[in-house]
Length: 600
Image (tube, rainbow, N blue to C red; front, side, top):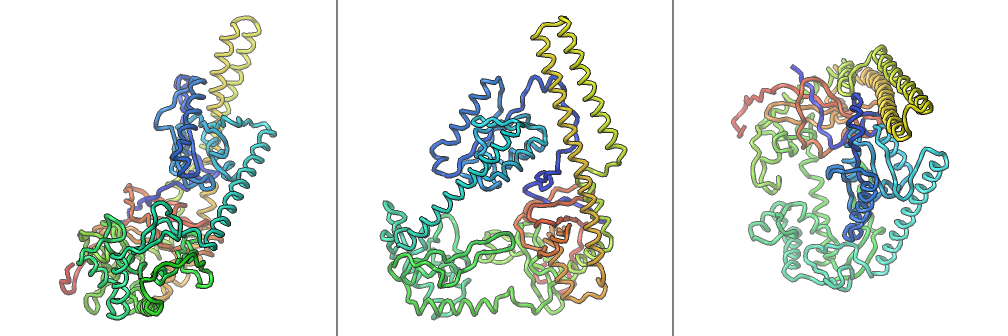
């Protein structure tokens, strides 16, 4: 029996889309809206130096003073702050919590000191303002109050463009200034020295203050000698360091193979500090890499720990070992190689062949502490490779030949299927309510003009009616957004069905290589937890999404997946544009062991 389960995500992609809106909810009672203003405060500074100078505290004091002057109260849970986060990025913890809070229709107004505190780029400002106002939340800036007047909107655009230009100009000046200092040899490329070196505490970024730590330099020399001359392995060197109780580079951590490899590949031990040696990752699916030697920047010389000839021999041996690494061994055809994870401990699983004909996926936590970096051993059992491969391939074929399952799961997971009559009925109800309020306003005005009530009473009642009108207008916007979302879901479902029809041709005659390629494209992760199998698919929803490779290793598979009855899909976090991620859970997988015991 199939049980669909939603995949665990750190964010909600649909809540970020312009056509997304919170689920339909009835308007709060008039008495509650009149008595409580659900107010939120947001403050941000860009650097840690500004954060240490209490820049955020000063912004919050201004915001709270303005709220008190207006007679508003704000709770501690509605105060959002980002200390030391750039305004050029939307990945800020305080901003994320504010957006999630607004998506639940839990806020009526957000106070911010200036537009550049919300975002530096004009595009981001417009995106955030539209997202917040769609949920019925008003955004107010203290320094530059904005209205819907075209002149104010134009001024907002100009200020956003100026703020974006100012940040780009500052970043470019800092980059060129840092590059000039590196080329001049007056600035170190790192703030934490490599193992075996120390910095002058009074001049932590001055290359002239770098000196050797004799004890650690002796350890580095020993590692190079053992690896180059004695032909010890990286695991052997790591185990020796642990057995000799040598203090690791970072206190509170342990020696591991990655740390030893970084030491053996760092050219600073040959007597020269280099900058610009590492090319950082450029986006999802990419990793760090070593730049060509001619692109390195020679900063300053230091005392050498090993000779250049010994360093070159170590690099040659490392390159040779990479060619014979276990990850490059394709002697045993594992269909789900590098895609299986253990749901008990969260680590990845590797292939293991106990004897001819008996292959398993084994959790990495069952290996020694040098491999798993953990002191405990995972209690999960070994996973029969042939049985898991067959189950995953059968389910993949079933999904591709019956794409209506994906479409139905998409509709149920995001608001359900609405009939046109139901949508029209809700629209008519809201319009009747708005018309009724408009008639009440007209009758109230006529009563005031006839002298039935005084000005104060008229203003109070008029304010109540306007608040009710705003509430109905907000509900109408949410209803229209939900209708747009349903139309988008229908479009996504059609694209998914078309893709499945093209890919499903020739599944029965597919070779092992073709099966492996299709699995790499459409499966993000297979998580096995005590015999239960969860398959996480990534399905393209547009022709642009088909151009990328869909399967990339992700870290969020470690998070627990909430269980409930019914299908669900996830769209966004960890996926590329034009892709839809599907998570499916299956019942217990009977783990049989028909071979020798081998510790299963």
